[in-house]
Length: 418
Image (cartoon, rainbow, N blue to C red; front, side):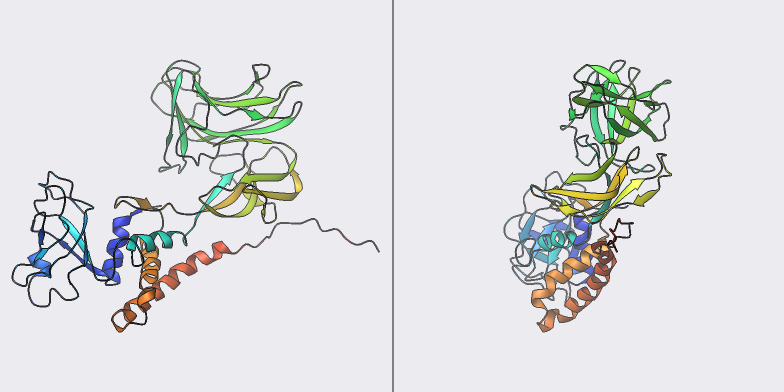
């Protein structure tokens, strides 16, 4: 999905809902901005008064300073014959010309009651991002964390996260070997002895070397031996799902999952590292701060990359204490991965280049409605408010089905004795 920047959202709000004006300086100093093309001439200063906020949105091509994203205020209206506008406080850096800028009508600003940024970030909370997340005992096995600090210490390798990209759309753990048999281990996982577990990871290799083998291992930390993993490697450059049942030993109490490669200088990429006990009917996940709510529970009926089928298996999640959620299902699950819907709150935006995957038109409309709502009874703003409210209602309707949970899964219902 395409992303949009904070600056692009603001610019759409300014243009579509007439919240300000935008321009390009032909000359600029620390105390004044000149744009005769857009702010000179008769009626060019309409709605522009001292105190209007001004934000420099790009540094000029010959600029050696750092004047972009500087916020100041007008101390005069534009001069009709020249388009010169004085500002106070001074513009920092060494601006020289052709900077772009935006000017907000009063009473709008960037933060506080009439702050654009505050309303944009409020609007982003209304537009959830839905993810399909695997349930796993591997800390960060779902790859939602940005780094690798929750994993163990690498052995003959370096590790980092790579963002989801075309064509696979996977956020991956990248492990680069500096010697043969390098790997990144998971954090230790407590297990029951003499028990069956389901192990799955999506893996691929790059074409950096002629021979490259991604290797998945499960290590018994008590006996310091590898437990048997039937499907433990791939040499494919496309993602492959490595799925196996792992049997713990009679003394196994803790295991770790190793993601690595057989050869030196090999780069392997891993996603959805899943380790789950077989024969469960109860699944628990933690409630992270960025999670808005949880949805449905599914089991994958295929372990083939690109051909997964998901079957809904459970009821609505039950919230427990300490920020935990639990599903209880009617059938035992073994030899399959289990997934749930997670609706995530969008991250707040602060810098102009910060991005979100939410559609720019939807964010701009909802934010403009929120911004204009306190002014809706004023003649000057009434039409603009109703325009934003209409667009906002259309945008909100697109996300309303995501806030409605309908459990269509089969249930066990006890019948009365007669």
